[in-house]
Length: 308
Ligand SMILES: NC(=O)c1ccc[n+]([C@@H]2O[C@H](COP(=O)([O-])OP(=O)(O)OC[C@H]3O[C@@H](n4cnc5c(N)ncnc54)[C@H](OP(=O)(O)O)[C@@H]3O)[C@@H](O)[C@H]2O)c1
Image (cartoon, rainbow, N blue to C red; front, side, top):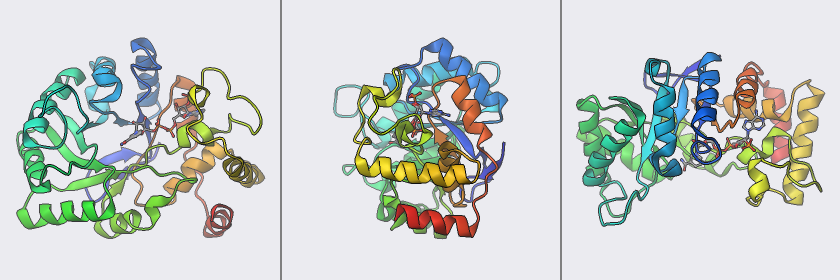
């Protein structure tokens, strides 16, 4: 496994991470434990979850699996989503964050969270209130680093400048949707992160599994796979044409499209960890094995011509 500094922080994260929105939904407690143990054994330390995944069950299962080996993992969880009815049970207010961090700590069976991320922006709460609440959690030792997710470039910029001017802990990472087929963040967010040293943790890095090579034009999705439950708009003629071109590119170089999906993201030094959502031990091992293909400048140019 290879490790990278996340943003300009001192935190070292595995370039292949583990996404966990399948836990508690498509994976039960035992399967979750198996996937996590395999991930740790292949050197993956970055585990991304949220208080809202399976209404807290993902955190619970992770906490259970990490008993006795907590220090092997970097736990990144999130807050913002609605957790109950009532005016203060969602969003990024001091009230909600302060209450919800305790619930996450309890479910995760730990006394600290490595990376606490704001899941969504909250138009009703000033960013200064959110950052002050997070800064307090850092000082209390409940949270070690803070990050955000689904922020636009200007919102991240506003946050970073608020932290700087107010002397508060600053977001070390942002978690946006990003993969070789969906590059919307390249216009604004990626250049901002590169300039200001904010690490990127791409979600849907495999386009919900589409980039793994198991889906084929004109065929039903294999039973039991995520996209068999609904194609999430992926099974279009345009996407299959791109996928086939990427598969050809990869196989000409004795690689798979799965390896390409990871290598293309990791070619950008602003990417910290690719938090792919593996649902079996074999998938985790397969993802870890992709490490090592460093795309050349010429290969990146060829790819650019395919995907533009
Ligand atoms: N911040 C946010 O708003 C947000 C939103 C979404 C997700 N996330 C986070 O980002 C993580 C990653 O996103 P994601 O899991 O939704 O999508 P993803 O990583 O693009 O795709 C996950 C799917 O890919 C398949 N897969 C993974 N490794 C594979 C392998 N080696 N071989 C074959 N198939 C493989 C699995 O499919 P099968 O299930 O079919 O086996 C898995 O369900 C999530 O788990 C979550 O932690 C964050």
